[in-house]
Length: 113
Length: 113
Image 1 (cartoon, rainbow over the protein chains, first blue to last red):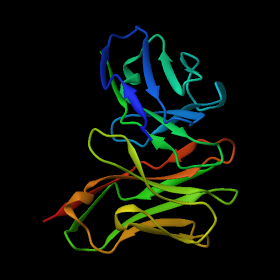
Image 2: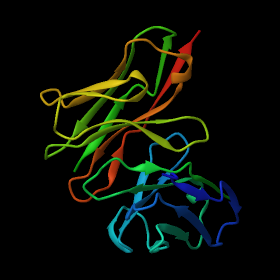
Image 3: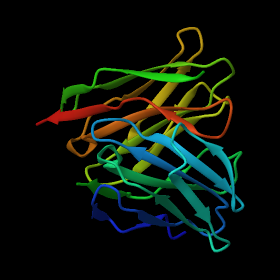
Image 4: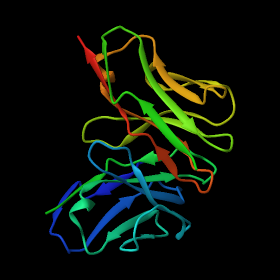
């Protein structure tokens, strides 16, 4: 197992810009979820992908979008960044939707100024 | 709708003392419940999970949790705290409408020498 790797670890963007965050899941993990963790809060579910298709979405606007690739990597894209988008973004992967033991990455700390 | 409440945003114990972190859940269906730990500037690490098997669940690092349906609780305990246990702890429940995890707001555990 290689774990879940996220890049970059830190990022500073200006309001209105677009950002792409990347995640490399564990080999064989065909389910990936993204979470947003604001400072001092628990993670909030953004969306989940299973076999390259979105199969669940949280209460986030359409400017939050994602992709999952056949090589177990995925992306989170955020358009028209707002100051409130500043947070730690976590990627989590799982071998199977029935297996709830998600493996989390260390996250990307996004700061919007 | 499912939800998780963690009582106490901060818990302070002495090294060697009992650790008790409280979690109450709300769920219309039998829940899947989790405890995660987050060290500074890191992602989430799974401590243990309850998936309707034994009500007393043992996890890593000496932690365990007991599922009590009558009290809708899933409190995390450890008999003897170590300095290395100082971290943020999150309780989570699996959503009944998708595979997303719903997290509590977290409890920061402080361990005094």
